[in-house]
Amino acid sequence: MSAPDFREIERQLAGTRALTDLPEAHGTLAGALCSSSAVTLQDWLREVFPEGVAGAAETPMLTVYEWTRHVLDSGQLEFQLLLPDDEEPVAIRAAALGQWCQGFLYGLGSNPIPDIDQLPEQVGEIVRDLTAMTRIDVDEAESLEDNEQAYSELVEFVRIGVQLLHDELAGVREVAAAGSDADDKPPSIH
Image (tube, rainbow, N blue to C red):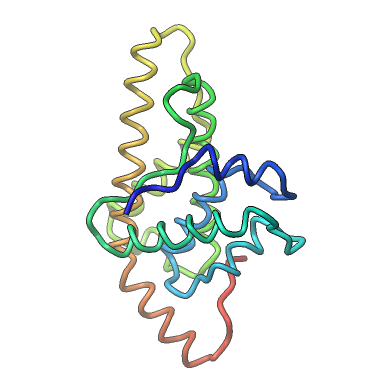
């Protein structure tokens, strides 16, 4: 299953009253899916479109939701961050990566998870690294090639880290789902 077309979905979002751009919205979805298996398309759309109107973006957002859920659940390391294409300047892509990480942390924290310090050490380290990446900046003193290389390495780190977090938090999601079934309350991202 191939990744959704970033440019097309971003174009569709531009004509709506979305609260955020695609990178942050996708990060929010990925984070929420890491911490809860009960997150629905409607839960996510309410976060992105608080007025409840996705308009023409609803179908592309459904594609993003289904693709993201599928690739994370598959465990095949097919997950990709929805970020601007490589034709965009590295500063724009780096800012989008920071937004993606910010959205991810928001989504991850939107569902009850154990104290990060109680999880495997690697999980806590990844969350701390993603927190630092929300402040990512391009070093203008470095060459374009060095910045491109650093950006590519960071994207790959985040991609693998998110898949690892999803896999490591599987038990947390199962416990939360069992508790949610017992409470019979609908889940929420916020």
